[in-house]
Amino acid sequence: MSVIAEENVRGERVFKDISADDEDSQPTEIESLCMNCYQNGMTRMLLTRIPFFKEIIISSFSCTDCGWSNTEIQSAGRIQNQGVCYTLKVKSKQDLNRELVKADSATTRIPELDFEIPAFAQKGSLSTIEGLLDRAIAGLEQDQPVRRATTPEVAKKLDDFIEKLKKLKEVEDEFTLIIEDPSGNSFVENPVAPQADEALTVTRFQRTIHQDAQLGLRPDDDLEEEEPVNDLETMRNEVLVFNTNCPECNVPASTNMKLVQIPHFKEVVIMATNCDECGHRTNEVKSGGATEELGTKITLHVTDPSDMSRDLLKSETCSVIIPELEFELGMAALGGKFTTLEGLLKDIKELIVSKNPFLCGDSSNQEQVNKLKLFGEKLDKIIAGQMDVRIILDDPAGNSYLQNVYAPDPDPEITTEKYTRTFEQNEDLGLNDMKTEGYQE
Image 1 (cartoon, helix red, strand yellow):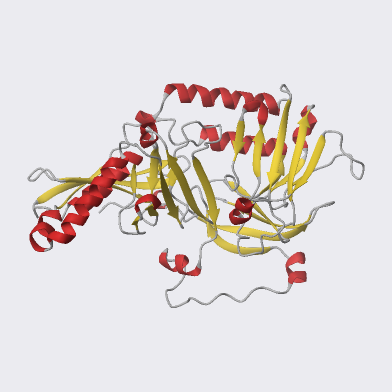
Image 2 (cartoon, rainbow, N blue to C red):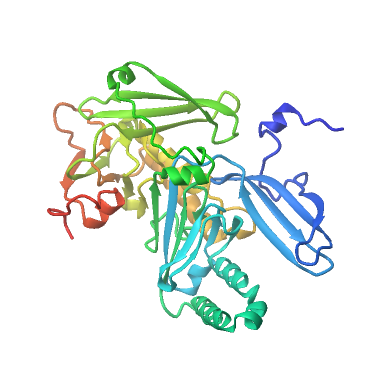
């Protein structure tokens, strides 16, 4: 009997990076029962790691007797700290080619048809928008012959609805596709990256207790809120340590959390995870105070390489804009960070260029690859102080910060603007239950 080495169990070799050049990375074949004709078919499983999506399990079943086949994808990595919701305005047939990863915990909705695919109703999939519609149509058509014989009224209504779904593929009228995933492991492609996608809105949210129970993060019978920690003075003087898993290799690691007072700003919560196994390090910052009455837009005119050493706090509600590159990074894309300007730009490059899952393999587009490669080179020039640009931190919650190296005197390179939030921004911040009087419509 073969023995699996400890390093294999810990993810060193079990989940290999996906690569067309790796001849040793072959799927595992398992003879299994076909649920269509009940003869023996073949299931192929591949354990791999896709940049940005961490570890995944790709499985494909095919039956040589009846020709039935099925593919699915499952996340083998950790559940993210926040859920994610993608709202896409489908305006043309080109939008149907957007690639997406839909986890099995994701809920899919098309408001115009009052159509919803509940969470865990389908297995996870790696597909396109058109493929998602085809899968929904096939699922509805599957039992139609039986319905036409037993309940013809219901079958007629379903036929009419299926026709509406098929018409969506013609994109005669604009429609909205919403994918809401509390696990945070779903993804919809931005074909114009690194520029902001006007048709796609990405929001992060905190899971409810019920969603935690669905994902197995707490017992089903434990639906009571945990008692809050009130001893803030104790938390300020101590580094709290709790167990978690490394987001890269999934090995058990420790996360440190501490309250820190930033000079000339406010108190923040810093959480840092260091993995002794693979060396991965990550940090996340959350504001220790409430949402400010006004939003804040901080503009830095980069004039010298020394600007890269400025400390900055980017909250999870802050967008990063570089007008000279026509680039905008939406809120929550990188989470909260307490780093330097150089560190932020390197994180942006890693997210947009290095870890983009659609820039390798058959799904890659050479024009887009060259475009993102050029974008990465421009970021390198900014870090080296070879480009005259503006870095804008736009935070509607007012909880972001950029170091003033001339403090307490004004910084000639920094412009800070306070503004009133719009009604939509209040909704994004979860303030829609508050009185909206005084806010812009």
